Image 1 (cartoon, one colour):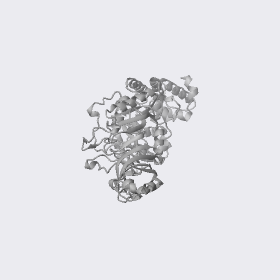
Image 2 (cartoon, rainbow, N blue to C red):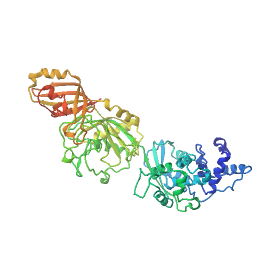
Image 3 (cartoon, rainbow, N blue to C red):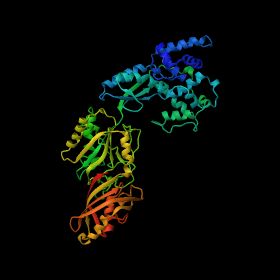
Image 4 (tube, rainbow, N blue to C red):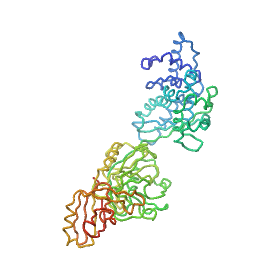
Length: 581
């Protein structure tokens, strides 16, 4: 033990007094040190025998000058941590064994998610008041001031675990990244009194805004918020837990689950077919198309990243309740024709021109999301009605309609695998994954390229640039008048640069979009005649432009429009996105 002393230092006499009082209450040696506020890297991972020897020596030295009670170390279950600190070594062994037996790649980083019994938060305050002494604390003192003077139990437990787990799995401990060990502790005997305590509180003290589960339960956040607002006298008035009867005999149990931070497989896709929706199209539980672009891309990648999952199991497939994405994201793209919504049984509409407002969750199984918790991004469409529920999310930089092709360099996309088993890839692996996607569809409707493992920073940067992105389109347009006799009008249109449009929300989407006038820009436009009534129109627009409405005018809701500029009725027949710049 002496080898640890120079690095760890010694407790001052006032702290030794607190340590001895904590031990007399029956607290374990680690919780007793927590009550002194002592922190040192790796301290709580030291063996019990070393910690007890150090405390005993400090007690004996102080006995010569101060009258202290006898030094007692309890061998029963700690009434404060309920055995969590005492059984840390047992948990370490289980975490290491679970990792080695799992189907996950060997981790390079790991983190903890420790969900402790809610009663520990209340017992922690009871212990502090008993050790410090209520006679030495002002009744009006806020509890949060006292709680901050001790080491948080979760921090101490992580300190007890991380070095041994790191050695066992040969990985580095981090706070949020890599393989995550989620430990759900359960101690039924101590949990029964939590709601009894809270239901006695007056309305001005009781906080449960983050309530989870049944009505008679209180969340961890609710407990913390409530305790932070209470004074010492308020707590002692309502708390029925006292140190004289807080011992427990029921066993502490826990459940360990492994998960990994989301994997962001990033690339670009080209859509080469005019009868392929971007996301699954389902109406009243019945699929309207056999597949979707999302599935053609994501499922082959998931087979590589999640080798233990049986993707042929019908139970794995999502049961969709609708085909349209739940979020109101923008489509800075275009479509061919007015598409009825899912209510009428037609394809999900691509929203070309609404304000970018997509949000992404990480964390995701269901989270954070990069993330992570996590994470918000503007412009990227996120669809939670995945082909395989709970395994991934598909994000794209806008979306095209079922009848619109995506050509050129393709559209950026991200397949966010929420809990990947394989997350280390060579260039050969990525090339193989691209080949799996490109060869999985016999009709060759989708092609991807530039596949790589993205980062949260890269994803956020792409989102931040969405408002500045331009889109290029090519469309086939029919004009009602003989344009060979009015080529001067085409010349006028072709000479337009950075033409500003005022686009009122189109009729076809006004039932689900805010009624606004949006200023958009046609940066360049070129009309090339095929014959008297037919032409090819190439144009580059700002993000969010309703291209279809620009062509026909939408009954005057888009000004100016190509119809207005050519002084005749115009209709769009085919549309392709040629580039997402």
